[in-house]
Length: 265
Image 1 (tube, rainbow, N blue to C red):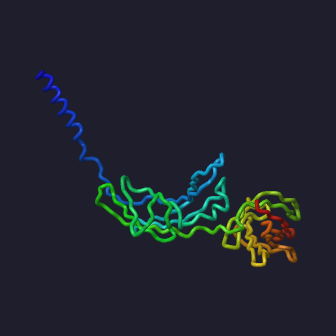
Image 2: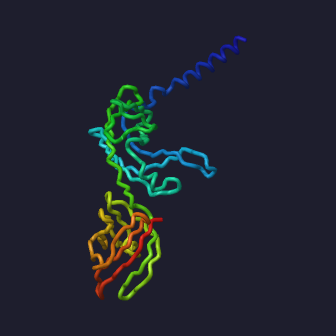
Image 3: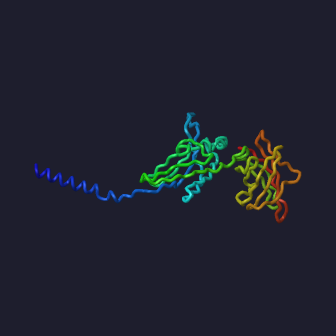
């Protein structure tokens, strides 16, 4: 029995030595950084069975992290519509009720200060917010300021349109029948592919005036070209969400004139 007690004592001492060895060499992190900052929009949608569910859309963010002044400035892009995240829901996205989350230094903790919203819960990021980040050592701290720039405008004209019409080209006249997406420039202007030449770098902007007349500008690889066809109609019908357009540009062998109807899908 004495031999057994002695053996067990030796084993206990051996294991105790193994447990203690090297513990003082484990790293104690003293970094209190925010490494990434992201945003998401949450809303209630219906699933295939018609039941309500929580839907989450991750927004595209670009965070400029200043580690000297401890500030983060965030630019946000709203994804194109898909599924239940349609145009109406895209327009609801607001910095006043949005969910933020961050990646920190290893084992660091973060807490809001000065009434900043909790991360992971809907909060107001339409103004600057401050957060205290505490490193894993429990001693090193840093206050970070988060500023999210205004969201891009999504006006009432933005969306996918079905385009039909005719491209009167001196050497390649053709009918047009295709879908094109036009995105917002400001409250009354959208931009998208020129005729069927979008893949060639041709774009147009459509500005809707108060009387629903439309100003068309054309661009070839960002250089403005052409004009609206003289005496032709360029207008928008809000009842049917339809653009009636006619515009042209000069080529080596004469005018290329586009006449098209854009109907919002």
